[in-house]
Amino acid sequence: MRAMDVMTPRVITVRSDDTVAHAVRIMLQNRISGLPVLDPGGKLVGIVTEGDLLRRVETGTEVRRAKWLEFLLGPGRGADDYVHAHTRKIAEIMTTDVITVGETVSLDDIVRLMERQRIKRVVVMRSGLVVGLITRHNLLQALARVLAEAKPTTASDAAIRESILADMAKLSWAPAASVNVIVRNGVVGLHGVVMDDRQRAALRVLAENTPGVTAVQDELIWVDPTTGWVIEGESQTTPSPPDERAA
Image (cartoon, rainbow, N blue to C red):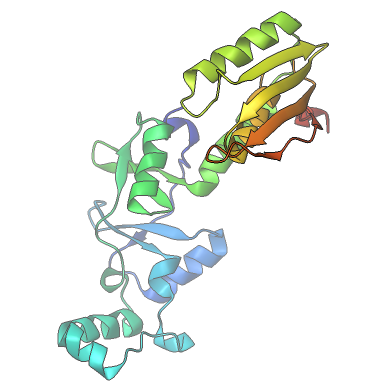
C-alpha cells in the first residue's frame, strides 16, 4: 500500500494568522488532533496539534521550572515558554518543521518515518500542495480493511507443513534445526526444543497464520541454553483465529 491508498484526502487546515481559539474549535468540532497550517498563499508553513496546546496558562498547565534550571537554560528558553503558553496566534505555537511525504511513498516507509521521528501524523504533498493527511488512525483503518478481506483457505497437510518450514527457514530467530512440524487434518503439532520461551510464542503465531491451519498443538520443550535444564515442557493446544467477517 501507498500513501494515497490510506490517507484522508479531505484535509482540514487553518491559516497562520488564525487564533489559537479558532484552532481549538476546529479540532473539537471535527474530532481531530492536528491541523496543517497554511500561509495566506496556501503554502504549508506548519502544523498545530494537541501537544502544542497542552502547556497553556488558561488551564494552569504552563511550564514551571526550578530557578536553578531556568538559570542553566538561559532567559531565551523561559521567554519562549511564556510565548507558547500565552500567545493567541497559531503562528507562535505551531511546529514549523513539518514531516511530509509524497503520494506514492509506501506504508512501510511511512511507519518507519513516524517511528524514527516519534510523530503521530504526516502530511501528504503533491507539487507543493497539501493533498492528504496520514495518522495512526488511518493505519489502523488500513489494517482493519486487510483483516476483513482475509479469506479462509483450505490446504493439504503436506502443503501446510511445507509452508511453515519454508517460513521458518527465512527467519533468523526460528530454531529450524531443533523444531519439527507435524500436521494432521489441519492441526499443526510443534515438536522439539527452543532456547527462549519467546520463540515458542513466535512459532505458534507463525503456524496460526498459515493458510489451512485450524489449531496448533504446542509440544515444544524450553531448555536453558546455559545449563541444559528443561524449564517447561507442557503440551498446549490453541485454535486458529476464526474468520472475523463471520462474527
